[in-house]
Image (cartoon, helix red, strand yellow):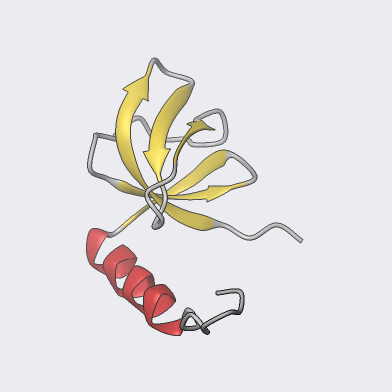
Length: 82
């Protein structure tokens, strides 16, 4: 099963790709071939599914979801895997 994730746009790489950063600050490249609009700018939030940008996400909504993800992460257990 594929799950979409939120990413922050860092920079556009032409008309076909965009460099993005996930909530863990991991930078990657996503394809714009499935994205129909041309209105992305650095700082925008997008939903990425299987390496393809599928939608632009409202910054407030993205912030709310990211906060929820960070709150739901298990805490580290000494000697265990976190």
